[in-house]
Length: 212
Ligand SMILES: Nc1nc2c(ncn2[C@@H]2O[C@H](COP(=O)(O)OP(=O)(O)O)[C@@H](O)[C@H]2O)c(=O)[nH]1
Ligand SMILES: [Mg+2]
Image 1: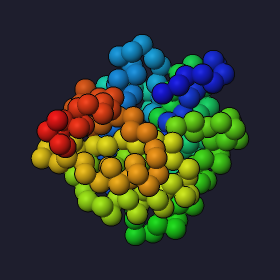
Image 2: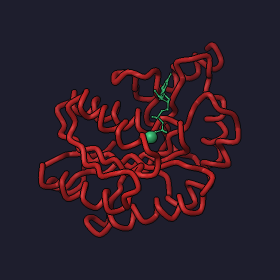
Image 3: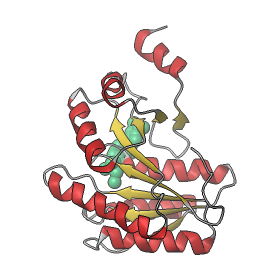
Image 4: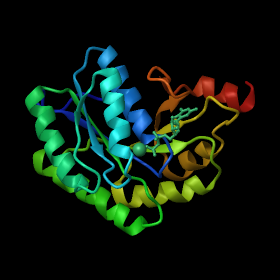
């Protein structure tokens, strides 16, 4: 993931996807990975819809000593994103990772909310969020292709993170998503611990899926 924007502004990564796909966990894992690499990172709790979601990211932030911007459940997620960018910039963060909501039953509103988050971030930096990643549960079947298309249409995805490849799952739907959307897979999730995030390797994937 490139770090070639203006040096005094954070590169923004938005984690997008349906509930349970692993956005919040991946936000924490990625922040941890970047931190280990000596980068300054702020995370933003923009899933303000689910009661436990803000607390979940807060507890990761406490555990991993991450800078976090969070408001209360029901707060305007775009306002949190807007504030988080400002906070990330003033703290000198290299990266801002934005965790978002993923409720599916109000898909229209969700897409509007994501678009609004993007719009307010662009008030700070027209290029933000530079990375718009769909977090996909690798253990789910082909309906994730349809979801991916909807998110892509509304938000213009730039890449994928495939989670839960540590179980028996082989991430078969990923080939379909890749074929449809031609998005690079950046990372895979291999468990629930901070260090269980790895850059995607086509060799490892081929080994897991085809036994090559
Ligand atoms: N085994 C496994 N579990 C994961 C992985 N990523 C996330 N999870 C678990 O999946 C559940 C949903 O994750 P969460 O990050 O809350 O999803 P969100 O709703 O998209 O934010 C949690 O219990 C996570 O611990 C992974 O790579 N492997
Ligand atoms: Mg979440």
